[in-house]
Image (cartoon, rainbow, N blue to C red; front, side, top):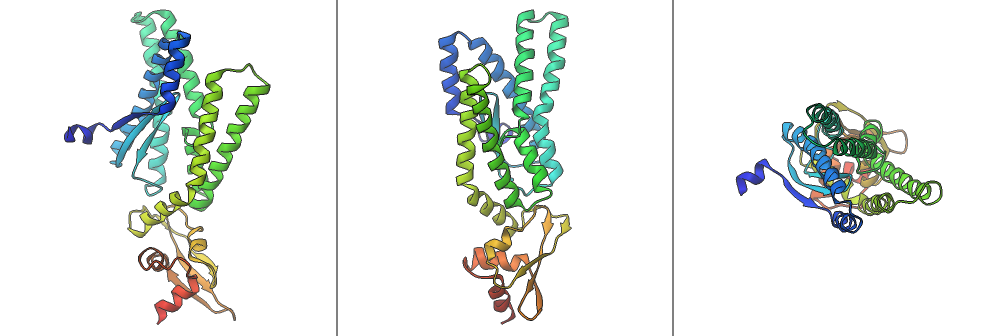
Length: 289
């Protein structure tokens, strides 16, 4: 079992999926749900295979209707290109599914009506996952784009806020402008609640990102200096940190005096010495002494 767990990740079903299973039995749409779940599993297989290729540490895969989430131990620490490839590997699987369906149609392996149903759901799931909503693939790609330009904390906060806005917009459109469907309403509500939870936990996500840097587990390919005032708190300094960048920190004092310290000095003071309320100027003074 231990050897199997190293090869195959733990797969869990989200509680919301059981709601849809019950609905499918009550409405006689279990076949449609089976087709959807098959497509979702193939989609997640794309993410998993690409992550395994880069030797990411994968904890589990959570499956829910119209998508899933692969939980890993990599939190903004891997090269940007790897995270992009792992993210788009899922949507790429839908192109493979299209080719397989065309092949099945030509060889008449499965009924024509089943192929049409699979074509429809494959397109819907692909488009749905490309919506700019976290943690869908479109939301992840938006976050990667923002985090390549903005500080990590700001990029994460922006993508969560934007995702909640898109979810609420989707609910309004669903209620007032198009015919109401229970499944799409539940999905948008679920995504809204997920992002609301992520917003509440945004501080812990950022601390996890900082801890990876502190323990030297972050990929770095460039240097980006940061200039701050001597009375700037450590957390405010950390909020300027970018992914893939090493930050020499330049401190300005009254009288135009300027000194520099390494980012590791600030991280060491915060995490090892637990000086949570220190300013960057106090950390610099402590180093000089």
